Length: 282
Figure (tube, rainbow, N blue to C red):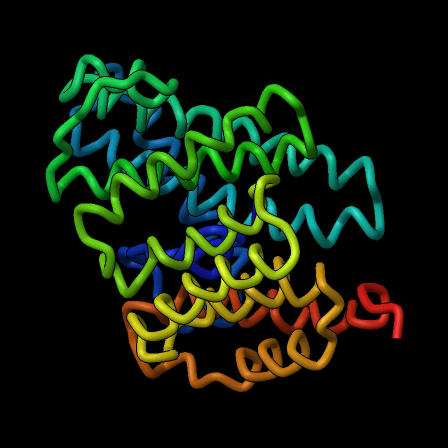
């Protein structure tokens, strides 16, 4: 799935840089993936018994690192060295599967019947506002694992879980985190096999408009996600270029909460524009 920017291809990447200088983050994003994320993840994994808040942080870190950096690198490698791309995707897959376990554990501790509900059970869980965090990042972990698996049937059948988690979060606070849930729904809806043609376009467009409105057009994620999931698929070349050029020219300093996610989305937009001739027949 494309949880990106708001990742992708279904997500917004929000993360705290800690003591890492902002200039280094902007000019050398790979330093963050190597020296920040790996260090932070390793520090949590060295502990025997993580607290609930610590597991929350690890869940978010693993999804952000796998989605925003490793899978981004893998996408570029596939065109140059397919086997190396597969190797990188495998690294992301391992992180994302661990994130799935963490998110599931946190919600199961609070709601023992959670896994039954997630598997399609008819039981009703009265989630609380604070649960949006786990619902969102667990959905992102599932979506990322599907993407990283490169079509593994075992992972593809998990797709309904992504929708169920996101819809549960939407019922609690649809505008949460600058419209992150709407943006995630763009990519999830685009992967639904029961929606085709104009019905699919209209359904995705609904979430696109809501996501753009929630962030006052300052989040690059919805534009990249729509261009990649809909404009590319339906060969809307001019719209594909228009959205990605808009993102490429965005002032990423408009909203500091969105800044780092927008940097990643902007870089993907620029890369996608270089592939335009490969994606479109005319």
